[in-house]
Structure formats: C-alpha cells, structure tokens
Amino acid sequence: MATRTRVDAGRSARLFHALSDETRLSILQRLRFGERCVCDLTDALDAAQSRLSFHLKVLKDAGLVTDRREGRWMYYTLNSEALGELAELVEALASTPSPAERKSGCC
Image (tube, rainbow, N blue to C red; front, top):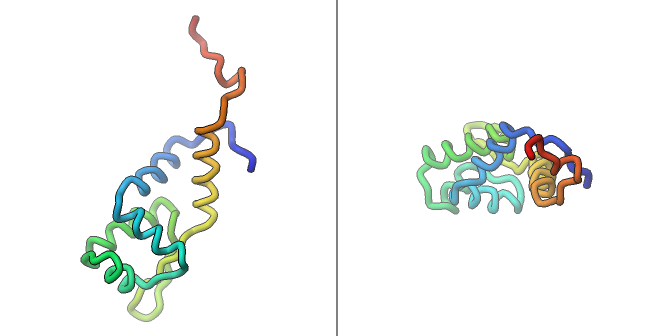
C-alpha cells in the first residue's frame, strides 16, 4: 500500500480524536460485524441513546461511519474507505523517513 508523503494534520487529528474514546472504540468493534441499528448499539453497550448519539456523531463527522434512515431508526455502518485512510496514516507514521525527509534546516 502506498503511503502519502504529506500527512493532513487536521484530518489525522479528527481521525485520532474519534478513536480516543472507549465507547467509540466499542461502537466500531460492534460495527465490524455489519450494519447495526442504533437501538441494537444502545442495548449492546448499555448506554443511553443520547450518549450514544453523541459518540456516533463524532464517528460520523470523522467519516469512520456512515448512516442511513429507515423509518424512525438509524442504521450505522463502518466506512471502509476511511479505515483504509487510517491504515495508511498509521503506516506512514511507522515508516522510516527517507534521508530527504529527515533533513532539517538547522545545524
């Protein structure tokens, strides 16, 4: 997988912020198995719907999940494209920089 030479710091911060909470990580873990209704997530995580809605909004704003409405219920799914982007970001952070990238302007 090719890595980008420049990392969008703002985008990276949004992604890592979305991953920085246990509840949001639990939501993502549950969504690995497929689309889930918000009521299923509420029951599985034993969380109030208002609290869960806040966390789902953070994940959605970061682009990690998508949603769709069916009647009065919302269904959430992992966004595989955003997960791929996240994997590329982590790979770029873990890779050894080239000599040109290591060169600094001082000393």
